[in-house]
Amino acid sequence: MRSFARTVEGLNFFTISVLIVLSLNLSIDYNRASAAQMGDGHNMPTASLDNRQAALMFNIDPSPVIAEKNVNFDLKFLDNKTGNNISHVTYLVTITKGEQRIFTESLHTHDGNLKIQFVPTATNPYKINANYDGLSASYVSDFGNPIKVRGPIFAMKGNYTVSIEITGVDFDNVFIPSPIKFDFSVPVAG
Ligand SMILES: [Cu+2]
Image (tube, rainbow, N blue to C red):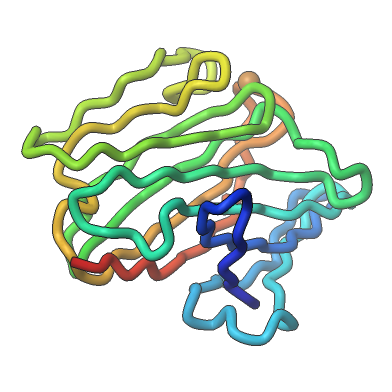
């Protein structure tokens, strides 16, 4: 796996791309990925579900993440054949720092683009600005706006782990029996 910094119009993005193969019987054969393992661009984790090939794109902006500054996540789950977004994707996003779980929510995107903005504040517990969708039991962003999270997340420097679990695809209320989970190490600079 590989993590790489890409410069797009002057902005530094930390982009992680994970290839996932989806198989018919929803059987999963996946590996956990961590950014630390993503050094060589070859050992991509694969998962099976539906005979489709899909790639998880995960961008973090800025890179490196800086304590007390806004952090933007951009998640897309792409059909590798067509390059189109897979729609109606439900993610369980969990952030831990050390042993402490500081964020965990189910988030859904109807169109396949999921943007989350973390605004570090002293607000504890964190607050989410987004609509709650009962069908997917998740927060959903409005038209192109990120799901905003205000709270003590990325407020201090240190090593964070971002776990992204794909729990549903194609429909709002159909969930994968064995979710596909990836862990990413995200160092936060002071
Ligand atoms: Cu949906």
